[in-house]
Image 1: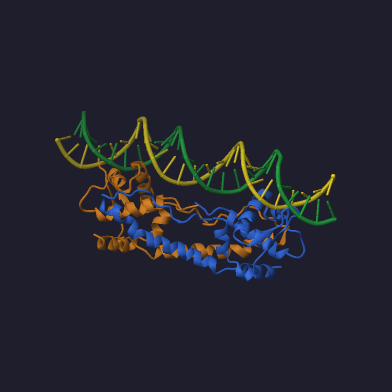
Image 2: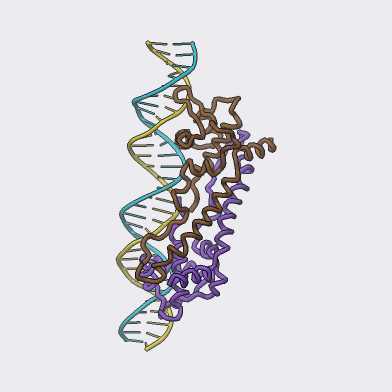
Length: 141
Length: 141
DNA sequence: TTTGTTGTAATCATCTTGATTACATCTATA
DNA sequence: TATAGATGTAATCAAGATGATTACAACAAA
């Protein structure tokens, strides 16, 4: 199992919006060329990012831009925007047998631990902003 | 996306082995009744756990048992045993355009952050043992 | 030798992902 | 106001993963 690539595609998209903000019209076609996927994938990605209030997209004339300050957008925001994980990260088997002492209590015993693990992952993503990534990117150029 | 339920099934299976170690012949059928899945699923699960050195299974006569001390088996061991995640947790889009400054560096900029997030998740799983879960379970009975 | 089990292959339906085509809609501008 | 170039979105599609299930050979203890 893997978190779908639409998450890294979305991050890549936002980096393109940051990097080319003033020098290019950042159309779905232009972004798609950098990411190397179909432009429709980018449009869907932008649609999610727009719904999350991260970008604005100009229908008709074309081009997208970041709405927030890069230091105010975390990887977690992006992760949520594109529904990388729906609800619980760990898929729990649906119907443990309540007539068995183990089956009856497995949820109570395990749920908290799994939520903690998921929270640790998400906390890490909350600690990284687009500004951090742009700094690293510029340093490499 | 979700981590497949075979992980929680595997944990449940191990808890059954712990709990009923001395009072029941823990066959795939018996375990399946507690987890509420097909016995073949349990056999496959046990096969993974056996390959990871966590359990031994008696072919023919039937029954499985935990090989290690419950305090020496972490959720991370189980997670790895059943291949909950193959390699990288985050699926990265395959071919960013190297002719684009963003596409060329997106891996360098992002990979470390994603690995750190995955590591945080796995560290959390390493901090929980079957003994911890059994303690919580017994407390509820 | 019989009985109850495990090991494993083979199918199957279902779901998700990501790619792609198609086309209606929109907007700046010529 | 017509047009050129974009976006928004529905509809398909192939590929892969998951979990359920059937079937049956191999095995081990009584």
